[in-house]
Image 1 (tube, rainbow, N blue to C red):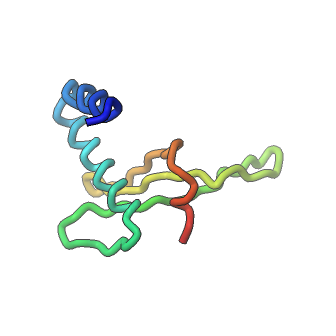
Image 2 (image 1 turned 135 degrees about the vertical axis):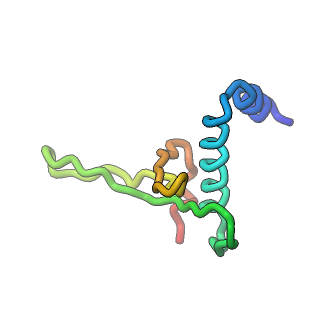
Length: 92
């Protein structure tokens, strides 16, 4: 296991159960969102990467697009900014 994964595992072991469940939903959504097929499997979590532009109404400019992981958790659509996502995931 590489050192980044070991650090992540060490950090995950310190999390309380509710935070582990949130992390599980985020990772499941991220895995599904980064699959090229995007064919939903019954009973699986659904997630996608959404590229959003952020408007600056004061200056009349738009910034982005920025990647956000969108996934369902407890009947609510959640969003997580993916600041380090490689731009090749923005391809159709």
